[in-house]
Amino acid sequence: MKRILLVSKKGKSKDLLVQLLELELASQIATAHTEEDASALMETKEFDLVIINSPLEGKTGVELAIYAAEKHTAGILLAVQNKYANVIAQRVEPYGVLVVGKPIVKAFFNQAVKFAEVTTHRVLSLKEENINLHLKLEEMKIISRAKCVLIQYLSMTEAQAHKYIEKQAMDMRLSKNHVAKQILKAYEQEGFNQ
Image (cartoon, rainbow, N blue to C red; front, top):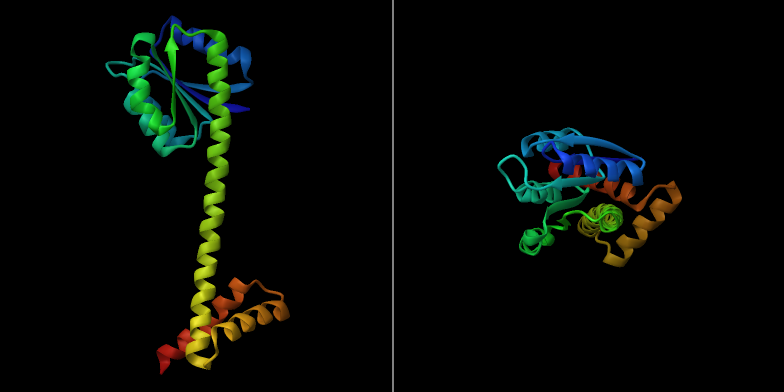
């Protein structure tokens, strides 16, 4: 089930968007009428898709779209009058916000929603990959520090330190990262006591 936030003034266009979303998607739709209400909802809940029907109460919705794109992984659609679509698109597309011209054409709207879903999935995959790479880098730093400690305290070469950590990991059935942490704990404490 998709979690959708629809930000729109009350009226016919909001009702039309709700109908389009209910017909095409098995979704849980939350609504907000102002930028402030939408921001508050986004702080407390995660959404897969945020649709902003411009204009809002005295605001264009552009700032809200940029805020949502910078702070959340949800797909962001901004519906604006066709005559403003190109100008607004130039401003928000660098943030990954999709602009949909109004009046809304059902087929185009459905394609835009699907594209936003695909984009969101891709962003989440990249975010997960980034986290994994960051963890791997931290592991490599710890192992490198442990090698430096072995070189300093046991006068090993870099290759010997590397083999030592690998052998200890294999013999004790632990990860190299875990062995490196044990080495750092043991030798760095010893170094501080001298």
